[in-house]
Image (cartoon, helix red, strand yellow):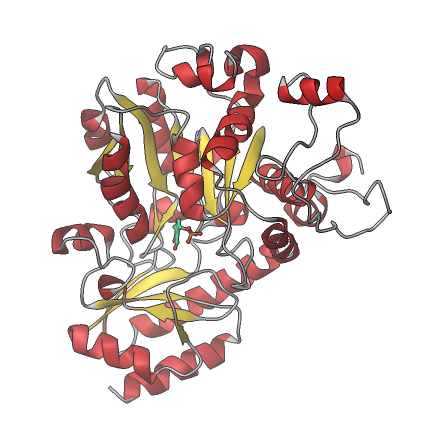
Length: 428
Ligand SMILES: Cc1ncc(COP(=O)(O)O)c(C=O)c1O
């Protein structure tokens, strides 16, 4: 199919990255369940290892099923290249790995998934990296937090747990001025609601575990590179812009231009860190991603109805959803996420922590799980679970206070979701 026929999101999510299998004509992407690939001869093997020819060597690096998924996500995000990883957490470390070294830091938003907060505080320390957290509603604060050792700016587009929309254009301006890459976790928005690269992001990371797969079957992650960042301009990214000793002295940016980050992620990131997606997981995600836009439209429509209903309920103190006119983030939401601000939000109950816990156990249709972005409606009390490792202050800044529950609204009938909440709230 020519590119001219492949412009629309609904078409790309079904076709991008795949064609009938060249060996068998199989229409669906086969699950290439193999660890290795037979070389044609010694020269062929050497050319592959020298990056003179692109092909398959070993499935820790590349695999056709996993590659098809990576290409599809790249197409949906409007990037130049990308890789899949074993989880969203792996994607974050893998995205930062080429940029960082002991003593270097990143500046990240205070509004993050709790596990990311922990990764950036605890795991970073062991690598000799560090992270400064600031309020990304305040571009001056981001600018002030950047120093000589900063190597990236990091935020979530629709920040977990509140589904809080970040003004990516304002953040990208700060990153641009500082000559730093902006890394955006687009998990909760998906490329259907927002393409961070269009707003100035350099790299996009995903937990494909969530909406991209959509059915709660497999963990996975992805990194998409815009291909637009000049890794050689500042001298701050030697692993990309100078001879890299981990790969017999290849200068990735010099040799591969816009594909430097992608090839580095395969040849060094996946090869040495081994955070590889398996082909079975890629298969489930390829199945799910075919219906991404349809699901996201229904997720958003349901979330809006449920949030409006909850806002009017007398046991509810506050609904934090950018789709509501009462939200301070409503305007940013409309500008950066014109198709809607997702289906993730928090609800503060007048009865505080006690009522939050009772609500969770009273619900019947909702599942009480540590996940989001499933077709099913999900609920969790973030403060005691996903954001458990944070201090009270950090939890407040992330929007995960004690008196709130986080809802991930599914694609069931909105009336049934509301009926379940109605009975659970009535029983408080
Ligand atoms: C926004 C966000 N990013 C990243 C992750 C980590 O993804 P994974 O669980 O696939 O490692 C999560 C997990 O909940 C998340 O919500």
